[in-house]
Image (cartoon, rainbow, N blue to C red; front, side, top):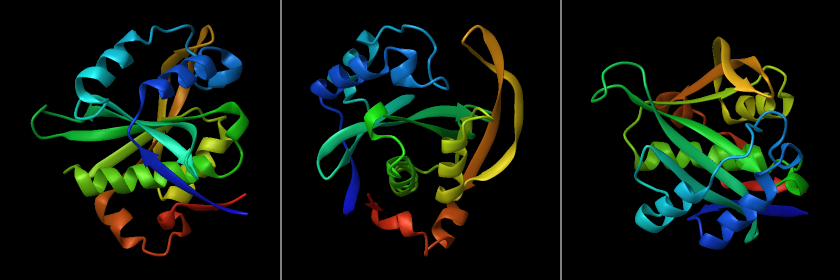
Amino acid sequence: MVKRVELRMVAESDLDVFDAAFQSEAGASEYQWFGFTPTHGLRDALRTRALLAGPDNMLSVTVDGELVGRVEWLERRWGRRDTSLCWEIAIGILPEQRGRGIGKAAQYQLVSYLFTHTRVERIQATTDPENQAELACLKHVGFAHEGVVRRAQWRLGRWHDQMLFSILRSEFEADTRNPLREGIIGV
């Protein structure tokens, strides 16, 4: 069966779902569990700026209108504040929705959205070297592996390496045959 993955603005009820789903290691996954974290900041950002137009941003991911997760993008800088902004993307798919290709389509749509609506030249992502699902997603979206950032992330009681990936605007625009362009997945 063919399904359509789409991004939309976050609703308050979405945050309730994310709180319930991602406030445990089983829900967040071993690669995204950083312990219990307060979420009132997200609710404040939703009320004041709709979780958009800031240093940390979020959209909800839906499949045929059903909420299945979220995508985020965060400001990162590789030099002076005024001239060296790029976005770093992240994703959280609800546990029962994982393994269906949603993450690939959602991250592709987020990259398309960011290159269409912001002036950045570079979008980057990081992931644990053992996170095979995210490594495959980034490859399908068109990200290039740049290297390993050693002992960059404290999680589950120890330091973890992170693999750094990026995609440039020109690379994304040149990739006109990517099947993810339409947001369609076969489930």
